[in-house]
Image 1 (cartoon, rainbow, N blue to C red):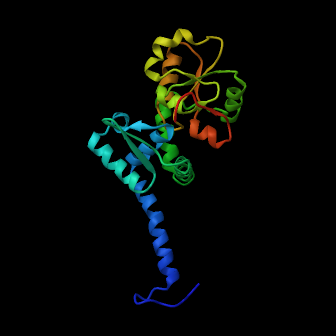
Image 2 (cartoon, one colour; image 1 turned 45 degrees about the vertical axis):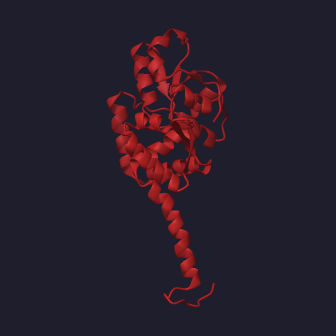
Image 3 (tube, helix red, strand yellow; image 1 turned 60 degrees about the vertical axis):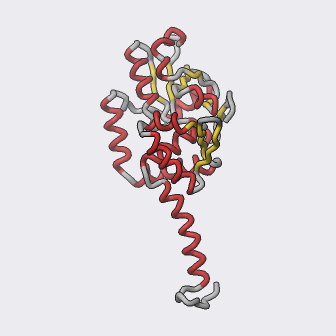
Length: 233
C-alpha cells in the first residue's frame, strides 16, 4: 500500500478506506431506526404498496414514505409505480440475510432482547419450553397441522412447505376446518411477529392443542429447508 501523502496529509490507502467505510455506513445508518427495520422485515415477506406498509406499521403515509426513501437511497429497497400505487420490495436476497444477521447479533449480545421476549410471552401464557428442532422435524414430517397466519399475499410470495394459509383475521370462522386429532402449529414472520402468538391464544381458548413455531419463512429458508411459492414474488 502506498504511503505517499496528498495535500490533506492522508495516504491514498487511507482515503480509499475512508471512502469505502462511508458507503458501508450508509447501510447501517439506513437501518438505524426501528421503523425502517420493521419495513425491511415486512418487505422481506413480499412486495407491498406504500399504503399497505403504512397500515401494517401504524405510521402515517408521509412518515412511511420518508423512511422508504432512506432505505431506497441506501440501496436496500426498490420501488415501482403502477397506476396510482407505488409498490416496494427488497432490492435483492442479501437484504433479508442482513436482517437475519442483525437480529442474530442483537440476540447474542443484548440481554434486553430475551427479557422483552420473555415478558411478552409470559403475559400470554406462551413461555413454555419447546424443543424447536423436534418441532421442526414434526413440521417437515407432516405430523402437525401447520398454519401460516400471515396475510394471503405474503403466503403467496413464499411459505413453509405443507403450510395452509389461514390469515389471523379469518381464523375464528375457519376453526371447523382444523382437525381436532392433530396438534396445530402456527407461524408468521419470525420470532418477533405477534400474529402467531395471537393465533395460538385463540386456538387454545377454543380447546385446540396449539403451539407457535418461532421460525418464519426467512428463518426456514436460511436453514436450507423448502419454501414454496404460489404467486408472483
